[in-house]
Length: 362
Image (cartoon, rainbow, N blue to C red; front, side):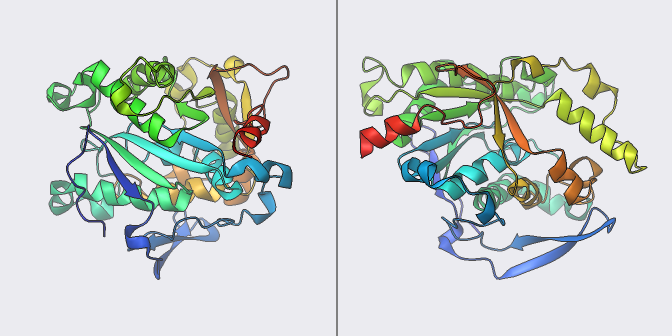
């Protein structure tokens, strides 16, 4: 169990990837999706897995080439999700791949997820709801460990809740935060960790306009631009200019393939009309990172958020593993800031940066 985090400095709380660096010795076996599939998934309980576990999640065969690995230790990937569990639902296989390669991976979680609903029936109890913020912090630490994050930084804001909810009026919620202050917090993190690549949310959010997701975009763009400006807040550290900024997205093509897979198996698809009415941004995709061998990072990361994810959910776990892997060979991204490659799609978030990193640090 993680102890309660100390009071933040400028809203930041940095946690190591594992509680006390311990390894997990207690596991529970969960039949895949209500025993529908024979494969079992092992979910850690207690302390998260030890840090820097290169090659975990059966990724040895999927490691990058030796040429890529030579510069990996000089590279850093920083992701900016809104809530605990967002880091697992989007991009987790990408992070697992780069972590296995040796890239330093940093998670900046903007809120504590205090307004999250308990969606796991087995845990939907008043005692759990009363300490949800503490529990979600522990879940985040476990998820970050199994995905492959080297460090978790809490930006220090409260969950704003869904649009139109009472939580929107809370004075400490992210949506009500002073924009300049929130940007400065993120700039401080960028300057400290010096990432070449930042991954965040797009402006249109793919039609999912949660106030906190919108705010993530609002602070990420100016933070990306100001972090390298020596005139901006010199008290926040030495200037650092990230080279690229990417947006995550739910690909319409991927949604259609998953929907069809459910139908082909004679199962009810969890994708209703709302999913197909959302605006498609597939034409904006610039980058497809191969994640073969790393899909388990997403699955295990989601299951680590035990209060937020129903282990019987057909949305997350309704397809057998071999089907899931066949329709998820890569993660999709949109290059929003940085040099556009001559050929699309890119296959590497660090495309064009590895030689420069080798020269700078070699």
